[in-house]
Image (cartoon, rainbow, N blue to C red):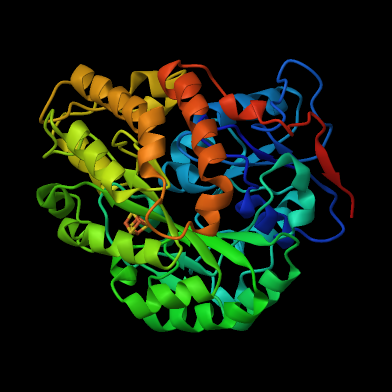
Length: 447
Ligand code: SF4
């Protein structure tokens, strides 16, 4: 069986945890191979692996590529199944391109699918009745991918879901309203087994539950790992928690600030963010040696043409380690998608099926400016934030340099600047495949 991650334009070379989990759910007598289309682009007109079954992990941004890959295998008579966030949101669309879909989590449905496949009795839709009890989440089989193709970092998951309700986010669609946490012993045992010093929590929100995160952080301290992860601002209001995070090895957090505007925050239901508190939380994190990777999105209903300059000014003042500036994207299955559809503001209801979809963004009509103005302001923001002057001004001169700043701030930001000029501003595709250590050999694991 072949498991495949289709290439996404904006993915970083970090191994796909969900397919390593699917591999762990696969009976041990089945031979599993893995291909990452980002690292080793699949040649769909050339030789493809001769396998009995293909499983593709599919997000909305990779859906088109996933369909192309599925078609190539199916033309060779090999059945294809797909799972992930896009098949969960749009199973009927995805079923037009493959033989079966896994809707939602796979812990119970994947072994059932494999049984049915062995009996020649594959159904069209696999959906488990309940969400997976967190103690039944298996340890990922990371052996399926070749570590040297990726950043020297291991990812793992302690929690699933998120307690919040942001209207643009598809996490709720996938995990329902649940927020579940794995037993701390299981997370620590898995962490101990990881080969790299640096780990990334793939959780949507590592500090979503105060007591659980407190216990997890305390348990991490003796392991002396360094970690990064996504955190919500609501979990970072307490300096004692930030101090504990630092003690547990936290070197950086990814935070979705989304907007400086209270109205935007309210309208997108990201109530846990309070723009007035942003700077004090950021400075507390910095004081404890934790770098901040921020995300601000553009195109929200209360954005006007001045939003780009205000955001860049704030982001430089805040001295973020790095910032991502996405254009608001209406993902299918989200409340945002439904609202924009009702308001007749989508430019294409199936924008994910467009070739080079990034070039067509925004996929909706914004309120406070034209689509062209949004696009121009967005490009200006990237250019400005990753200018040499901004990179210099953002360095943490006034605090004792944190480890992350000391070691990787300049190389990372210069790499990011180059990537942005090529990919975001230059429109060059698949820039990540030019990482220096990239190799073209596919992985294979025989069991
Ligand atoms: S806090 Fe993050 S993960 Fe949770 S719903 Fe909002 S955007 Fe999604």
